[in-house]
Image 1 (cartoon, rainbow, N blue to C red):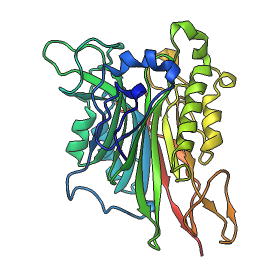
Image 2 (cartoon, one colour):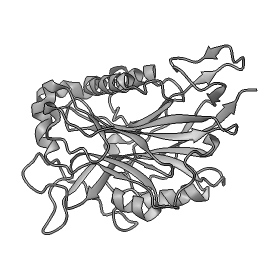
Image 3 (spheres, rainbow, N blue to C red):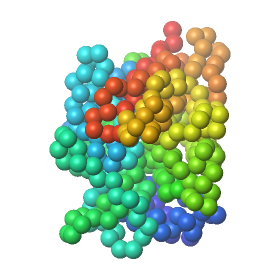
Image 4 (cartoon, rainbow, N blue to C red):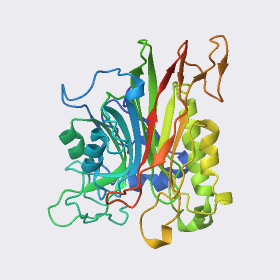
Length: 360
């Protein structure tokens, strides 16, 4: 996978081995100044010997989606609780993938010059210092794919400049790094996608694509009515189309993130659009926003899946829109649950566990 850029993506800073899918050419002029405010994407392999074997049994895999409020959420504590089994009824977790939104990175590679800079988000969390996603990955010995979407505003004095965006944090090696720039609505948004490989008890190996996404909560002033749902629907349609055009369109996939679906349900088509293509799993039960009172009670965060389902009769394949799958391999229906502790963020995390069912 190369990092070559077309003329319309000339301002993108790809980082090593990352495939970039640029936003619509009609949005290029709006996206350009936002691109100028971010550093390169980050691919960080875990320290040698600090992670599990390359292809573990899938039944050991936990998935979490969380908007961390730009480092305000206590990510190290979440990881400690997950590993210790405090999030899974006492069942300790060895293998996991975190799909994160609104993480940040402070680095000398982040530009300090002129660019579109949104309002800075830098909470003073009760648990101590904010969690820089690169620092967390290194300290925890995890694989990381971080894709910045925008600057994190202006920093004071000699402090390092910051950008913020989406990330995938994993005990398992990541590959097929892809950054998907969404249509511009209110801010620049870039989904992060990467693939892991897992095996079943019989030794059969399969790939699982993971996607972390964050849609806009409102559109720009000149299209303000799109804030009520049509802007997010446009972003969801573009994301789904790009994922389906990808050569790995039939790969089992988990898509998760903050869809910012704050408007009344009839106006919010983004969830329905994504569910058409990622139909497995349950819709989120209960509100996921834990911030200021104006947004309390809103369900903004979702986990969706496209997984191979194979009938017990190996001659028949079943399942909606699941594409090809390895022989005699299927997944148990995934169930995502909301965790009850926001851990300093303004969103509650979602947790799901994937299990693989062996055919007789």
